[in-house]
Image 1 (tube, rainbow, N blue to C red):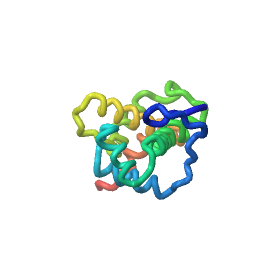
Image 2 (cartoon, one colour):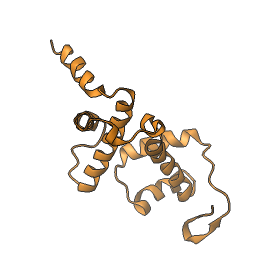
Image 3 (cartoon, rainbow, N blue to C red):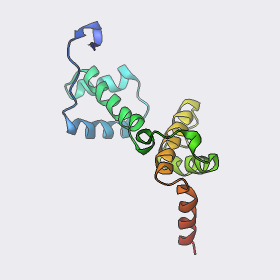
Length: 143
């Protein structure tokens, strides 16, 4: 597959994911620059660290792909309807703690919901009553 650089220059080889330290820099940058715009944000960051924007974008895609394509649920062959819908709802509510749940933008809210469900399905793959058991465990701490 061919990928294209900015200014429509053809690149013959895929970008190899070899720079582990770049991931750390990228995560720190995202934490300090939430919801960036390409040319005003991520591309300037790429320039500031001396790499092509499309190379940096490949690392962003890799981070997203690790989450979307990985996990217990994806490798299990199970389907969402294999789980109790109430357990899924409980899971989504619990897993929202990891996300930008207070952001009022409807697109961000949808992304958070998808990610929370994704995490919940991974846990439910481990145990179909994961969130029922979690609730019991957490209530025992309150006593």
